[in-house]
Amino acid sequence: MLQDSSTFLYSNPDYDAAAVVLFGVPMDYTVCFRPGARFGPAQIRQASYGLEHYSLQFGDTLLHRSYHDAGDLVLPFGNVNESLSRTEAYVRTLMKGGKVPFVLGGEHLISLPVIRAVHEQFPDVHVLHFDAHADLADVYFGESVTHATVMRRVLDFLPSSQFAQFGIRSADLPEVEFAANLRHFPMEVVKPLEQVLSDLDPATPLYVSVDVDVLDPAFAPGTGTPEAGGITPQELFSAFGLLRGRNVVGADLVEVAPQLDPTGCTSVLGAKIVREMLVTLFEWATDFAAVPESTSHVHRA
Image (cartoon, rainbow, N blue to C red; front, side):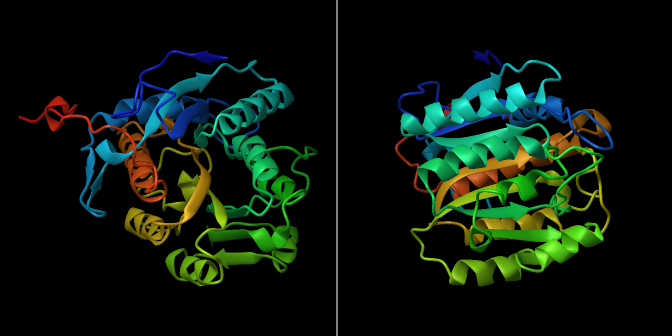
């Protein structure tokens, strides 16, 4: 089911010992503008080796996190339904083994089977969706299951009271009308997230879905559907800081399309996002035996 690949920086090679399992879903079969997100997981891993293990912003290190990089799922090219089924089955297997899924996309549609599997185990899970696009269309170009409809499909089974989206700056009128009954926060991230979290018990299970295009394309041009007017990386990292100490039971980072950014900056930023998510969202996962700092992967002149 899984194929070998390079691993994210300081991944624990021992699957059994790790609390969080990082894996890729290299699928971009339903993207509506520019394809290429299937290459995101591999490039994010490669870019991670230019990072420090230490997060200066959060004063913590990957050396204190228990995560295992399992590689990428092997998918039947072009077969959307089977790819989603394989993803959901794998997440169920992880969760039965007591692991927490952290998924690298791939297009945003890959969040659907992951959230469905998480919701089965945690019916009260709240989904926090960070994106430029509402992804609330019921049908897009005649299709009901695409990256433009993913959150509408999530809301087919998730109660709307357990859903909130942040940073949205692109939606059709029917999506806006549908979102009127949701916790839907255009443009902003940090202040509305503070508001949402203030209403939740710290033990409430959370799933965090981050589309890299929530960031302004000035910072992340390597994505399939860039949308001007986005947030800065610092705003996104501040949002992660608010989630420290919370009960995060799953997460994803999607829509990094590295070939659309010849500078490689989007992949490097994607790797840093993953690092900061590991440090903040999974603060509880601290049973990984520390790796000596002398084994640092970073080389300096």
